[in-house]
Image (cartoon, rainbow over all chains, first blue to last red; front, side, top):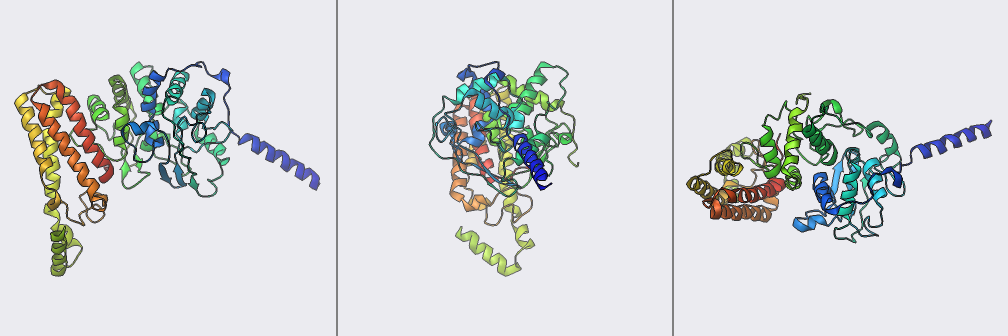
Amino acid sequence: MIRATLAVCAVLAAGAWWATGGTRLAPGDLDVTEGDAAAGEAVFWAAGCASCHAAPEAEGENRLVLAGGQAFPSPFGTFRAPNISPDPDAGIGDWSLVDMATALRHGVGPRGRHYYPAFPYTAYAHMTDRDIADLWAFLRTLPPSDAPSADHDLSFPFSIRRTLAMWKWMNAGGDFVLDTGGDPQLERGRYLVEGLAHCAECHTPRDMFGGLQEESWMGGAPNPTGDGRIPNITPAALDWSAADIAYYLESGFTPDWDSAGGHMTDVIENMAKLPASDREAIAAYLKALPPVSSDG
Amino acid sequence: MKITQAWLAAAALAVGAGAAQAQDFDNQLKARQGQFRIMALNLGVLGGMARGTVDYDAEMARMAAENIATIASLHQGAMWPEGSDNMELDGTRALPSIWDDNADFLSKWGAMGEAANSLVAVAADGQQGLGPAVGALGDACGACHEAHRQPSE
């Protein structure tokens, strides 16, 4: 009897071990195998990679050295961005394109380890094969850094990465949120906002497990790194014209000529490097969002 | 700084701390927020021309740019007494870092002044130069807001 119980436990444990392991892509899963580094630069800025992975306080050209080290406090503990420069030991120089795609689509590292969703892979999962390949090609052109990645500082049980399998089961793999009705500009805007630029990570409130609350999509949320709130950017609160939104993303100036502050200045630095048509697509997307009451 | 401290000590002796102190900073808040409003108003002129929503006028552009540069050249000390941060007072988003790292705040203010001077240099030379110069000024605004101003709401 005891032996049978033990056997059942062993099978369950093995099943749990298997079920909580990370999904891996295979080379045949990607339609594109050779990226274009020049095209990848626009993907890089749209995706905001440098905003988290550049060293703390890095400016100008130094933002292209993805040495990591920035700290991101959260209710679960402090996350630290790792080195993703092309250094083969300290960074990700020994990765393949398939490793990169697995990380972006599934939040899983080359050895099957889950990444914490401070790395916004639930948004990056929308990336096209072409953009992943181009981004990977661009990342490989950047300067290597031998700065070692620092560990996260998380409280139990969040310190156990296998718990992330459950989190992903609840929160990852979702479809796009906005129904574009097939409009090409809205689709481009949606790809940028919901995918590359991962705007919802800050502008949408989270549930107690850190999952995004889709019913309040872009309705504003507490500021994760300080006082105040990240604003509601649905038409219920943001009444700027599409042209005003596009200009804000280019220059940081609001319609009454205040200028952006906080983390948004960094986002604008990235958005300013995109083609004007992309900023216009983002603006069109925001104007098309279902209004979310700020009181909710 | 010394004058501020002496003034603070005198104020504390005379009326005690708290609400009276907050009220006493009312003029400083109005003055420093007023100077940002003056800059915003003039930026509106330049930015409108840069975006093409307002017709370019060399003389108007020159005057607007000079107004911004003039504000930037004002000595800031009097407007920023110690204790007038957003932790101590309502009605301001000025972070304590302005005082904790005052050298950084002043260097960012100085960078804004340089960007304003560059704008003065090109403002009357045609509409095409406005966009980049207004953009550079915006970067200078943002650098300080990112470090030293509480995000809105």
